[in-house]
Length: 222
Image (tube, rainbow, N blue to C red; front, side, top):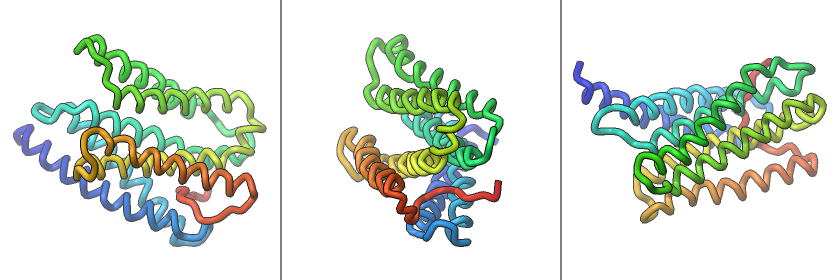
């Protein structure tokens, strides 16, 4: 099978699963926490986002489809979806954090490469990649600091879960907005993140007030 045909199939898979993820994530977000529909839609969101992110990263390396932006969205989606799901384990005592630490380290290394590779290869700073990289590095460094404090980590599991899953949803929304050119120039890369940032702040304040209203987590029984 020709590479172009493979790329076409992967693009359809990426778009299809990405669309399902947007709908499932929205349903999980508005559903009341703890209900079956919240858990099931959350799991659908997790798995479809996972597939969409992986296919995006593969396509970004194929001939005639090279795209550092698509790769960046894929990396971000993977980081947020994996760490958001795994943060559910932090509510238990003494979780094994080896995998979590490596995920954060890989995100930090990837973020550094996203900043400096464009400078090395094209002698210019890529603003979009740089912003994505800084956000990923900040989140990852914060994770590594929390991992050193088990008691604080246990208390923070829900906030981490909320922030990371919403981060994954923002990544999916960003890809959708950019591909469909809803905003001119580079604005589409940042508007979903800005709006999503306010939304995350709103829910974190709700949690600090101990009002556990509907959120977008991926529930599991672990």
